[in-house]
Image (cartoon, rainbow, N blue to C red):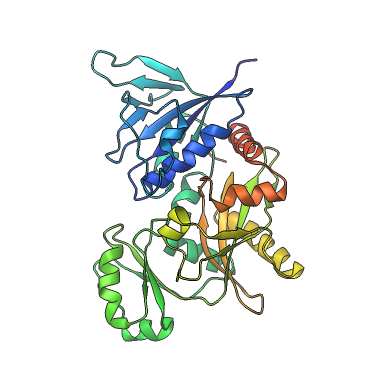
Length: 358
């Protein structure tokens, strides 16, 4: 039986380019070779699509050196059909490969935000993960909170700062209290985030966030343990939550920034040590958030859990990290779905769903 050809797309134009490369290396390494043939496709920081490397090891972090999409044959997708078309001089229009399904291991803007999902819908290629609407809404942290609040799901205090405003009003400061976290609205991996403990530092933090995204979100700090939960859709339509995992930071780390996530990762305790009732509530809330945003395929829902078990949803990630230190595959492995089975489930769910309105 012919193998399913899977285009694993990675890199991209966001600040999470390197993280995407590392995630893709793990996905490529765990594809079942008996069922799938991998077609690596990189997107350079300038937005050029190229055939990726055959050896996924070149996409891993080496010491403290972050990877990037290496040079390759330039390509594009056809207006219709399932091929990859060469753009190189002298090879224009040559069909390089057929593709059955796409695994867009893209994090951040121009990849996880509905843009690539819309492109794949237009050319009729099935793909792993949520569709256009869910991807766009979950990428924008302010809209995520609006949707979750509309469904009466627990969120923290926040201010969605419009473009052009460089500071908070006195009323907004009173609403939030200190400390606050100033974030780009549409970014991940802690890019552009500043923890602020003095109101005088807010304008600089906003300016820093806007080096990543003109839209800025300011959140009140939430006291509690950082707990994550994976949500997975199966080919038969079932949606289930993983065992939750707790992030434990090193004593000298103040908050979960890029360094703590990828270069000097802390411990991940799976399953998190929670009362059964709290764990059950957290898993049910994760699935509810998944449905509230109309997600498909997968998501990772991040929580704060207070001393009394009170839940606060922090973020919903529609293409969570797949790196060796990432929580999503680790939580599912403890839940009983190993990395290879996880990748297989995601691909088969994408194929079962297809494309188009649904």
